[in-house]
Structures are given as structure tokens and as C-alpha cells.
Length: 128
Image 1 (tube, one colour):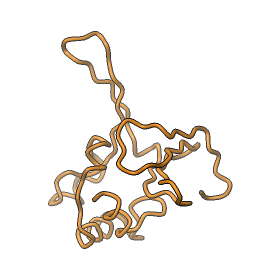
Image 2 (cartoon, rainbow, N blue to C red; image 1 turned 135 degrees about the horizontal axis):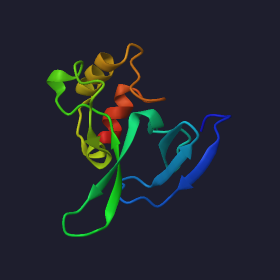
Image 3 (cartoon, helix red, strand yellow; image 1 turned 180 degrees about the vertical axis):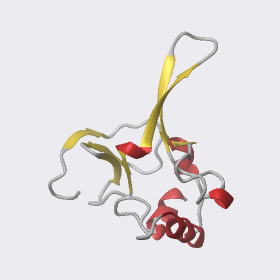
């Protein structure tokens, strides 16, 4: 973990995960760090995450879900960069090969890094 970051909450138990690890909540972002690793494999700024309240039609209860902004249509990546919506669980299930992940990273960001400390190879490896 980078030095100087203020960790406000750590969670080992999450609803759905394929790799054992810890979810870190910092002051400006949240990140997933697998066991026996010292870097985040996934990291998102809070400004890129929106919260929604979902209401089931048969109950009075509402459920809060986090929505990560990632494009679902690869043909319109550049046009939808400001309006992407996909459920976080679905984002974890995407299957990308490394050349496609490299194209996404190259198209989305000038520096070639989609998230803090995440390269196209890391992205494709973690989403498979």
C-alpha cells in the first residue's frame, strides 16, 4: 500500500469475490488488495463511483448499490466516457484478452493507466 494514505476502513468479508483479499476504503479512493500482495489490483476514485437506491416492487425495503462508470459498448468508448454505467459485480466478471484491454486503456487515457497502479495486463489478468 502506498505510504501516506489514510486507511479509514478495511473489509475482509465482501459479498462476491473470486480471490481472497481485503477491500480498503481510503479518504479519496477504494481499492482491492489480494492476499499476499502489497499493491492494489483494482482501485477506484470515489468521484468515479455513483450510488443508487434500488427499490424492489414487492417490498418496502431498498438496497444501495455502487455503480462504476465503465462503457459497455466497445464501439462507442470515446463518446460515452462521461456517461458509462455498469454494475460493479458485472465489471468483475468481464473477460478481456490482453490486446483488447490494452486498446481500452490506450483509448481511454493518455498515460495508458486506467486506474491507479493498473496496467492493461493487470486489468485483463484480474478480470478473467
